Length: 293
Ligand code: FVH
Image 1 (cartoon, rainbow, N blue to C red):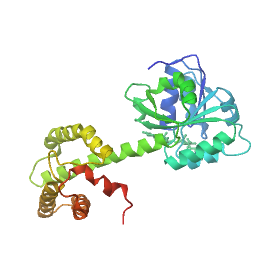
Image 2 (image 1 turned 30 degrees about the vertical axis):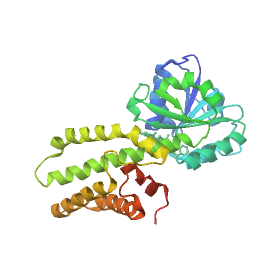
Image 3 (image 1 turned 90 degrees about the horizontal axis):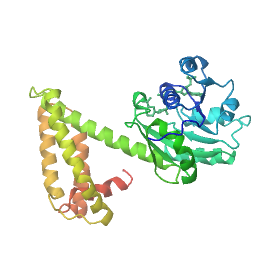
Image 4 (image 1 turned 45 degrees about the vertical axis):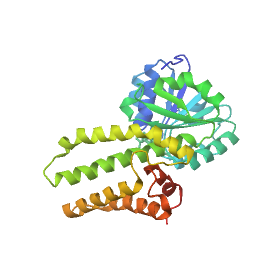
C-alpha cells in the first residue's frame, strides 16, 4: 500500500466502519475531517487528531475527496440528496453496501449535482481496515479512481473493477454468495457428523481440506463455462446426482434438515432431464442463469 499522506480527506458516517476508515486515514497521516449525524461518535476521533465539521457542506468543502459510509443507500440519499447540499466539484467515494442498481442510480444523481462518483464495497471487518487484509473494491471512471487511489491506499488492498459503477456491489454480493454457500455446506456436513458423535472441531480440518481442493477446480471449470463446452473429464453430472441421492438418504436417516441437499439434487435432476447427464458439473450454470420458477 502506498498512500499520499498529505492529501486531506473527509469521512461522512462514523458507525463502526466509518470510525475504522477515519482511524486508518489518521494513522497514515492524512488531515481528516469527519461528520456524523450523531455528533458524539466523533469525540474519540478528535482525540486522535480528526477535525469535526459543523455541517455537511463544511465537511464536503474540507477536502477534495469525501468517503461516505452509512447504513444503506436510502440514508445516503436522505443525507446528500437535499438541494441545500453542495456537491459541486467534490469526489465522493461511497463505501455503503447496496445493490448494483442503487450504485448506478447514485452515480447518476450525484454526477448530475456536479460531483465525481466512485462506488465501493468493503470486504472486511472494521479491525482489518488499514491493513493488507482489507479488500476494498471500487468501480467508476478510471481517471477518478487513479486520482483518489493514493489516498484510498491508506484503507487496505484497493482494486478498481471497471467503469460500470455497479460492479463493486455485484462483486460484493457474488463474494457473499460464495461465502454463505461454503458456510452452509460446512454446517450441513457438521450436522450430519454430529449425529454420529463427531464434533464440529474434528470435522473442521477435513472440511477445510475439501473446500481448498474444490477451490482449485474453479479456474478449469470457469474455462468450460467460457467455452460453453462441458466434457466429463473427471465425473459426469449423472454420477454426481447419484451421490446427491446418498446425501439426501443420509440426512433423512439422521433426522436432520434435508432442504439444502434436496435443492442441490433438484437442480441437477432438471439439468439431467434437459439432456446434460453425461456432461460435467459446471453445465449447471444454465440452472443459475435462468430465472427460477
Ligand atoms: N461493519 C462491518 O463489518 C461491515 C463490513 C462490510 C461493509 N459494511 C457496510 O458499511 C456500512 C456501514 O456499516 P457500519 O458497520 O459502520 O454501520 P453502523 O455502525 O450501523 O453505522 C451506520 C452509520 O450510518 C449513519 N446513518 C444511518 N442513517 C442515516 C441517515 N439517515 N442520515 C445520516 N446518517 C445516517 C449512522 O449515523 P448515526 O446513527 O451514528 O447518527 C452511522 O454513522 C453499511 O452499509 C455496511 O453494510 C460494514
